[in-house]
Image (cartoon, rainbow, N blue to C red; front, side, top):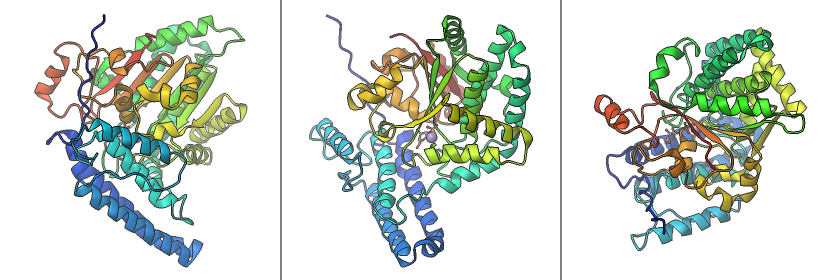
Length: 443
Ligand SMILES: O=P(O)(O)OC[C@@]1(O)O[C@H](CO)[C@@H](O)[C@@H]1O
Ligand SMILES: [Mn+2]
């Protein structure tokens, strides 16, 4: 009989001094405080739009959020959701599951439970604070920050769009080697684009300032797992096998809006334009999430901004991308599973429809740190554990994580590799300076 190996423990704030501990202790309350400030600042706007009712809704949302911050900071039990939003029952079932896991060690709570669970729960409660308070129910408290990130990355966006439009001019004449070179460049831009997330900096500015293409070479040593060659093989082989009947579909599970999203759109446009893929499916969040994550409204807003930009190549990108959506070769999808606390190894059970949909893809690109945490279960893995093992049977299709390290979990390293980086850079797992392009194709 095969030995059943126990899974390592979940990351949690109960490990004092860990990154999870500092996040729950400092960063999450800061994010709540900023959220409250944002609502305060929009008070007049709510009044102008909805009169007294708007102001009352704002007050109720603020008091709900202050209560939440207090619960967090005093390590109160995590309470069932009391709203009637469509995912509430699934959340409450998951809370029950956590209760059973804690095995008489007390109720699930902010500093005792798995970090991933309580962090997701905070964003879900922020959503409830607004959703339960019409008429401001659909106000996205993180919208301003996402838009600001986009505007502050303007120069980098211009540089990227210009590079890409120049590339399109002679893309048909590129030989395989050149095509591979361009794919690798755009993969790296999309990888490093993941530095620009706003929950990491507790909502402080984090935009792409310099030209995103210039220093790629210098950053190669910081890609500590680099499976770009494997990605290339998969794509080029699929292209060669491709017949009219069988489209190559690539899915990208998006992360942050702002510069990162533009880098993802350029990468996926390249896949279409080079005919490495015929169809791209984008997966975004159905509610505001982890400060900077992309919602449908961010996705459409970004394309509109590009279209109407006062720069020829930026607007060309925007126009083409709107066209891709109209033609149906780009498809935007969302599913509530992406904003549940569940790790991806439970997708087949919790969201069988989504799992079945992903199975129709030739390649899944998972962007960012949170997706990596959910792929690998957010556990204290040994660095050398194979990625496939950490995925714990999650395997709808060949998949690849493009992620800069911003939480202390990493698998698939060579023996001694993690220890060696640790010796010279104790913050390597949480600084965003290192990245991975980590691929798994084994069914
Ligand atoms: O998924 P992303 O945008 O790359 O990163 C999300 C993130 O900033 O949020 C968490 C910290 O609160 C960490 O998991 C991670 O660093
Ligand atoms: Mn994010």
